Length: 313
Image 1 (cartoon, one colour):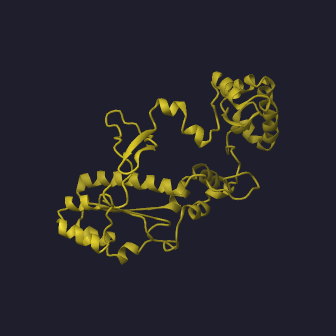
Image 2: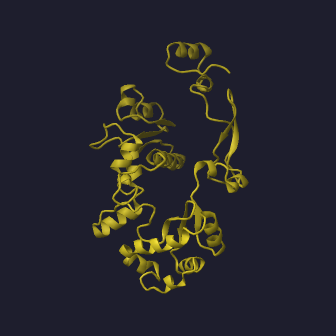
Image 3: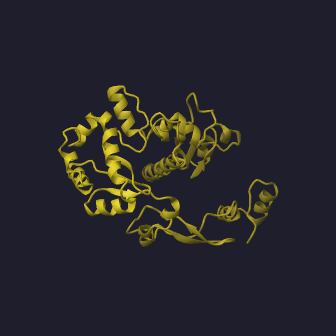
């Protein structure tokens, strides 16, 4: 398997493109991850996450109504493109199990970003309406957003009839549930322009207590809600600690390095935690030895700077 993340044509210039390598190994699975894909009008343009976020429409729906374009806080197109590449690898491996043939896997930041527009695409294709930013609110459900409290913010998703009724009861406002404009999620959606008024009324109440108090009360009533945590709070979260999500990885030069765990939990074949990521070139010689190269050949490749070898710790 080969994975590369360069502009289309670069690997061909290095004589390491899929067509050349597949002639040597027809079973090769070759993942080409790029900004725009291996062909098409944009294929030779430089691609970065910020560019893909803008071109894919993500920045046009992120942020507050009428505000400046806002980038998603994490490099979402980088991450989603990598996930699609990994999923495609699994599919290609299963296909190779059947027929012995490898294949080229073509994934891009741009298409990864566009693929996330599940609500936006459905609505646009059905109505022609161009989606706009809604802050933390949802396109079709309400209240489903961040709510201001006395000392900060919390999130709530009180969209089902039971949850909306419980939400109104906790806030001491059962009359909201009797208002035909807001009684059901469908009616709240039809009266979306008036939801601003409803959110203002909600926050007149929620500003009277802390976010922690509201979360405790609402969770006690079964209403989906939660604190808005910064990463300092997340990395000390008691639930993640109880689930053993974080772990200390041994590193050859730094000692124990705190790491994020895997969100995938397989009961029969659990993810193995072995070490931190390798240093640049740490395993170059080891891999070449496994491929049958002699120590003299490996040393020569290092001297020519064909490979990088990390110094021994």
